[in-house]
Length: 498
Image (tube, rainbow, N blue to C red):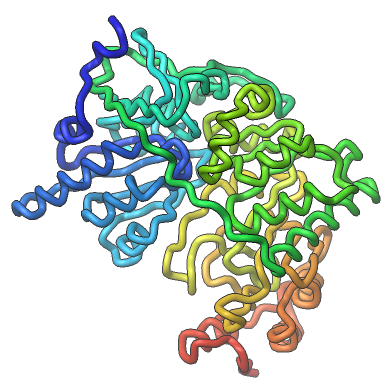
């Protein structure tokens, strides 16, 4: 048997095998490594079925967000009945917020176990992208691992998109390890970020492979916005804070592994760490390896980086492929239940840096919802890392919408991370170190160090309103800034009720 003797189908022929109501586990963690051809064909099929007056929707489960050919095409075709654990597509977001698609947010490290243990029901299909496949069912994944090993294990049938855009020489860049589930679980044997504990391939029963679809499609990853004065200042504030932590002895001189969220602020933070002379070369143990990481690996500032996806702009990926042997001992991709595992985060002493939509004066963080009700993306892996960090840092600009919104508010309109998990808050205005502080001290620090000057006096008046109790919270005023924005389009000139 050779790889070509697996049933070779077109994307449309493969999509035709999938029935209405199916639950599908797709590869992808960000657009990196996401299935592309079959989801697009599946969306076209859904549209045709709807035009014929027949229902057609599927449940979509992935590692995290995906590309437009998956989430976007299926959302525009109204083909997703429910979705988990994370998304970032504007069309899918609109369907979720309109109640057309059911979405449940989930910590990303929890997903694979919940799939294996049947919490999400049976999986009819796994549809994954591969750089190579062998006759005996060895699959070399592409630019992400995510939850693909678990989808491939649990699904009744498998469709593999063998994507010629990605070289088979990616074999060796993946460390595939699935822990046993309770009550048989053993300690995960990672004591250094560089440790390899698994296989370079995912091994499946060849009889489960219902189709191979050959493609040649790039990842739908975009670049990051250029660093602007606000993101540059946030990055510098984080780097200066961590350099001082080394100086005063709260962080070891050899430093500790870092985790960083994905996005423009995260990219700017990593860039600032890379140029700060007081930050030694370091390792990353994170979810996403992004553009700035590749640059820092090449320069030697990052000695080793491990994540579950390689999410970089196309020019950066091409340079990576042009120099694979340089990166082979320095970059490693693992399943998300390993990269995000609380056991390992705590053991390695990871410093975590994530981004907030809004923070309140006590240190509670909203990372998922706008004005309390409209989902933005999801909690992702931020909770996995934050709760178990050596030092947990949250960043955000101090204002948004051209200065009409303060990202520091009296009470977050939706809470994803409580004050108990948030140690350091950083905006372009400054750094608030909340460690060892009571609620009133935290409130004063956040307002003084991190709030935008436009809102600082207003927020401080709020903090000083309540004289009694452990937490100076005033329920009648807690959401007045949000209400002011919904009523007038700006949070400024908020008046407090006595």
